[in-house]
Image (cartoon, rainbow, N blue to C red):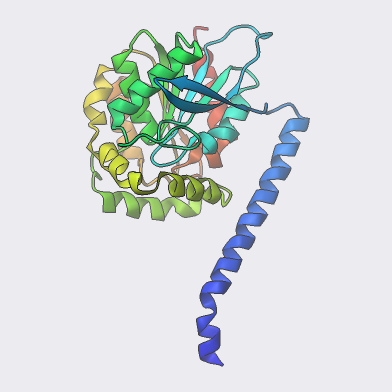
Length: 291
């Protein structure tokens, strides 16, 4: 009897995980309905562009009737797509035109034969901005997306008005893959369970190209790039983000010569998903300063 029970424990774990995910999704749906009723969010639509013979997808919300403001482009991180940016994007879309592209090899965008490095992803982002008619934007990056945003800003300084860097990577003190994995696991308990389906489907999508992209991310010398940034920048992290610890955020702020630095209580690395309301609330005054 004991052995039968023992042999069934993986099934029990899977059932428990499935139940937790279903509960998380149900709670998330209820929260979204409440936000809609209070006009606190706006839905995004999927759109595609043909760029150099390849298709690129983005989630978009625009409103030609409102007073023009700087459009926002939200750039996702390692291995994932723009889907985990949706909770933040929906909130920002009540005030701004918002674009959430899937970079090449991610989400619904095309799959290149070789996964681009950070410079290649930054160029793809700028090419997409050209196709979308976005002459000047604010870039909001998360994790590896901060690297892409920084590289795009340095290569095209006239196209980027300001930067929001959420949980920038890598911490120069933890540039090895095992260190990153350990920190990710430690902080996993400080995320909403509804994040899991987004991550799993996107990691399945990128497949064997994940490791090459990880190597590109770890090799990118962001600490050498930040002093070159010449536009206003804001830094954000979750309180329990072990991948982007406070010491690294403090160092990054010094390199940027930026005083706009925010720590969001409780949440972990994907704070823009788990603490979307807090993050967008912190961003708004920075994004509208001087507008």
